[in-house]
Amino acid sequence: MNLCSPIDQAAGYSDIRSAVWDAIGTISVADAPEKACTSIADFASRQDGELLSIKIVDIDGKHDAVRPWSNYSDGIRALSRDFQEVGGCIFHRESMSRLRPFLLSEVSRQRYEGLLERRFLSEIDKLSFKDVFAIPVVMGRGVAQVLIGQNKVMNAEHQRAISDMIGHMIAALLVRFPELGRLFDQKRLSKMEARILGMISQGCTHEEVSAATGLSEITQNHLIESARAKLGARNRYELVRLATLLGEFDGGGERLAGKTDKDCPVQPELGD
Image (tube, rainbow, N blue to C red; front, side, top):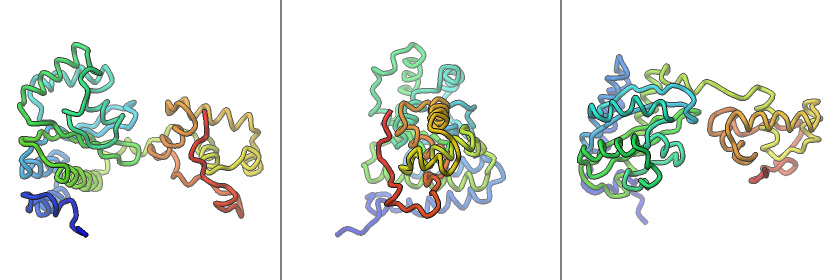
């Protein structure tokens, strides 16, 4: 049995552990977000890559992005301003749909046929990287999107190690500069919407919710539909997933007094 971690298994990258600690140590004493991001850029460089940008944004993109770092070429920087008006660049939209690390080479370019998108991809191609590694780091209701240009093809184990370590560094960045995470504190659901949704998500019936809140089934359904519209969910199952991911409630919902998991089981599918 191989008990080594992905970092230990990444052949040829024995210094990655010390590089991570160096970066986190620098972040913890940085006096500005830009300096903290510079330490992440140094980490990427030690892994034969180049940090292109770090963008922190609300997970559904309805709020202005925080850009603590950008090392784009002038051409990409100019295009990025236009992209803010059309819903975010290709990397942003892919990150929002995948919420996991991915390579630019994995993205179907046929999905992005607009003139602005083609220009953006053309500028990215001019950078002459082997690939561009996009690492979305989910933090509460926000996402830190980290882009690293890879100067050589990395194996899967090393990519996994890099994405894990970037997550630790972003966490250190937000601890050092909590103002960057202000997006995460904003909630869209009302307290009653979150309360009802939390109880329903635990499998409680409308009758049980009514007994605890005094609200009729019609009112409960109205609150759930209101929550679904606010979060843009297609059905109740997606609504629960989004609400949990966005930190609208803790996912545990509210238990009725004396109620057990057996009495009020979690239902994996709540229907449309």
